[in-house]
Structure formats: structure tokens, C-alpha cells
Image 1 (tube, one colour):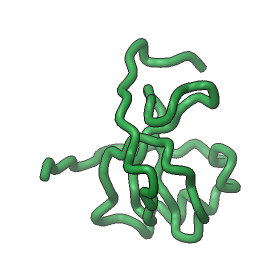
Image 2 (cartoon, rainbow, N blue to C red):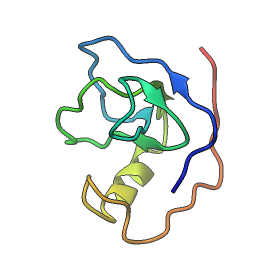
Image 3 (tube, rainbow, N blue to C red):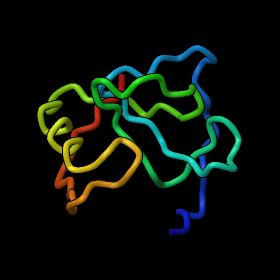
Image 4 (cartoon, rainbow, N blue to C red):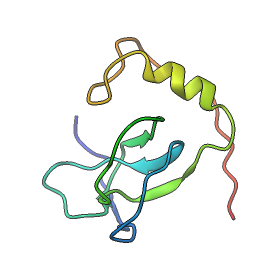
Length: 94
């Protein structure tokens, strides 16, 4: 509920393909294309076509097995049925 009090506006190219492992910012349904705040999502294998409307943060380079396991805790359109806690991430700028 609510937001972080800030946002970014960085839409991907019009025909961008969110490949499995893509990390992107979530957005409210009424926000313009590419405008995002505090939520993020990771694209799972078999996710289907996602409209290029979300700012891309990066991609998962290791640990997709864990991401797939999290994906089994609910359907693609809902939050997981159990609490999922991410203890740490490593971010590399390229």
C-alpha cells in the first residue's frame, strides 16, 4: 500500500522483450509507461508476453533456481502464498 514518495520514468524500447530473469520495476495501473516506484518483479520462464511498459533494472545472473521456486508459491498474477524474504543481492554496474 502506498508508495516510496519518489518515482522514475524510464520506459524500455517499444518492442522490448522481458526475458526470463529480467528485473523490472512494477507500476500502478494508472501510471504512464515506464513510470515506477517501489515495487519490482522478476520475470519467470514461461511468463508469456509482457507489454513493454516497465522500467528495466537489470537481470538475474545466478540463482534462477531460487527464482523459479519462488514462482511456484502462487500464480503469475498474485503475490506468493508464503512470505518470501530476500536476504541479500549483489548488484554490478555494467
